[in-house]
Amino acid sequence: MALTSASLYGLTWFINYWAFLGLEEITGVNWIFLPAGIRLLCTLLFGFWGTLGLWAASFLIATQFVYPEQFVYGLTVSVLSALSPYLIYLSARRYFGLLPSLHNLSPQKLLVLCGAFGMLNAIFHHSWYLFSETNSISLKSFVAMATGDIAGAVIVMYALKIALMLFPKAKAISNNR
Image (cartoon, rainbow, N blue to C red; front, side):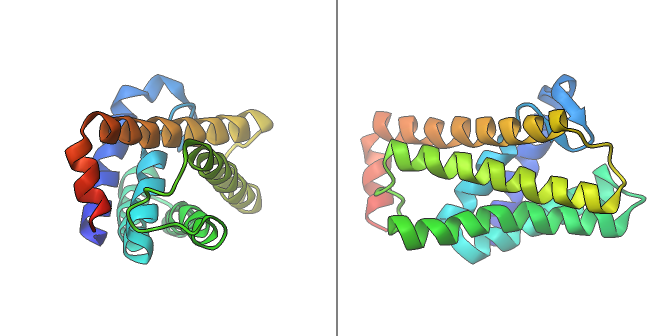
């Protein structure tokens, strides 16, 4: 589960990097960020192990690719990247009775989770950016991160939901776990 999460996140991160480079507001902040959807999906599906895989992939990307000269900065960003969807996962279990198959998540609940995740992630990251004084942040970069994370989460989660509706056999297999 951790390896699956790490692989999916890493692959999606690099695809997003190449596909949406022109939509990057500041380093690490995109107006569309599909990996946010993978973060939320893997955490909701795999819980702690999904979070661990996301952290590992985020750590490697942050320290080797995005911030190679700033180890502590990359380490912190990777922890925040994995922590925000995990907190949303814990909240979904508590308040929505989240099941491992996710079949009890209505479209409305899914939208709430995507929005809460995008906002929480932007708050965590921008708090760190402000504290560390190493990234040029602004209200615009906060809005870009929140928007990009929410958009990425909505795109990934609803694409999966639509795919499950179009392919009932896959849905039945998912529900039997």
